[in-house]
Amino acid sequence: MALMLHCGAQEVVFDQLRQLDTPLPTPSHVPIPHFRLVDMLRHSLSYYGHEVVDEHHGVSEDGMRYFGVLSLKSSYGGYEDTVALRNSHDKTFPVGIGFGGRVFCCDNLSFFADHVIRRKHTANAKRDLPGLVQDVVEPLADQRASQQRTFERYRAAELSNPMADHAILEMYRAGIITVQRIAEVVHEWESPSFDELKDRRTAWRLFNAATYVLTGRVVANPAATKQLHTIIDGACASVH
Image (cartoon, rainbow, N blue to C red):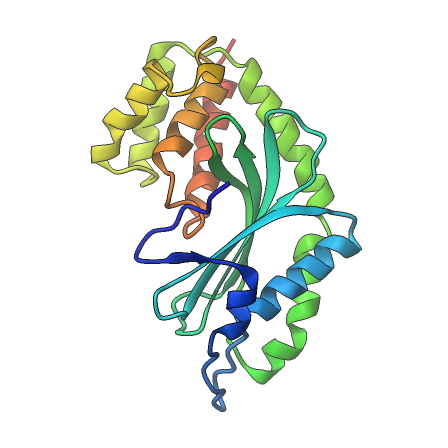
């Protein structure tokens, strides 16, 4: 899996994160090195029995903003569980950890749960951060099982074209996609780019049509696919 980045970000290997300069602390702002956050997340995942099988990291051109995706060993078919991490040294956004899935056939990434650690980068936050990361990771096993049930429900729900059209407009109204992207989602719904999604017109097919169009935006804005889940859940609920 390649980490889809945008806004001038570039993919790096983990060892390169160690080489990045971290701004000096001030009385009100104590930046957390990107690589230390990754180490904290790895440790917590391992402690709770989650095995990391792949990882990708990206930083902005100046190294101030970081995005990463760790893939977890999973027994579920058709997709893999992922954990994403983001951090910034320039106060662009707080530390965030998202849990979601990547669909194998199309490399689509989505988020089922997103946790923002809304703590200013202070000396106390640096001290407390390992515990805060652990609090986020602890319920992950339940979230992985819940995501599996959700995806199975999407695969089982057959949607008509009017139902899909309504859901796509809801995506636009919710700000998940722009007006320019509506036609792209419709095209992926009507003519999927991947054979695995062509057999049946299901909520799973619509979900992947949207996440395919959102490629490159998901890691930086996990809330988009959280909202998408709400809309697809609504479409499933309307199936009789």
